[in-house]
Image (cartoon, rainbow, N blue to C red; front, side, top):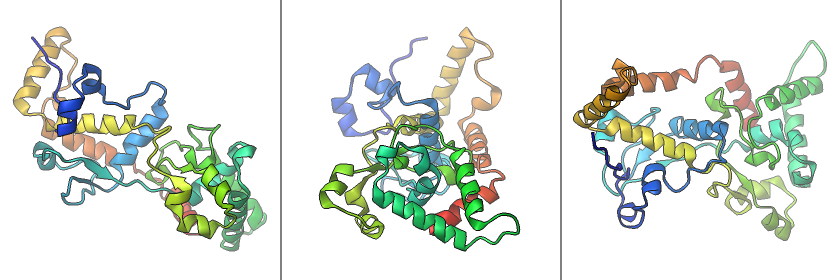
Length: 278
């Protein structure tokens, strides 16, 4: 069986004309070996659990676009999504796990303010509210994933619940130092000035690429997929499970499986929600 290189997905004129390099056609421009498995997973799930849209289409609330949307993906249409930032969660859980020299005074002060607000909401018969807050901070810090040497806001949690999924956020230290900013409200009001969310220094789009590869596979015509399956089975009879032969059946299984990742984590989700609202 002769198999050619796949056509770019989505179908974009810039890719068709500028990026005919076989490696780019297979893996995209941002599939870096130094983006670790945890970061790939966190980025992939970040796309899956965010609201999305294809081009100017309607909002997609599922983990995957519907089969009909995949099969009729318009040309010149990017996949758009916007994952949450969750600065309060990251600051509360990860500030004390970051390098001391990467903790600006304004961040430390907001951390202190967060802990005091959380203490004010806690009623306990055992220990003090301050101790409970310390336990909660230690608990959340236990889910620290990748990026221990980075600033707290650029780190990644183990994605054991969708509540821990947050986009990469980079602190623009030189900008903040130049402005002499010393107030958290000023920082949040000028968020796009003091933080960058589109640099992809660590979440380098490998997870986005894997998500698009999954969409591409599910959008493949059944006849083409059958030929691919037959070729694989000629080499390895057990390479493809029966439920993987039908794109619609596979789509339903993946949607259900991804949805199942948001399993019984209500207590953690509630804790994250409270911290984000402080």
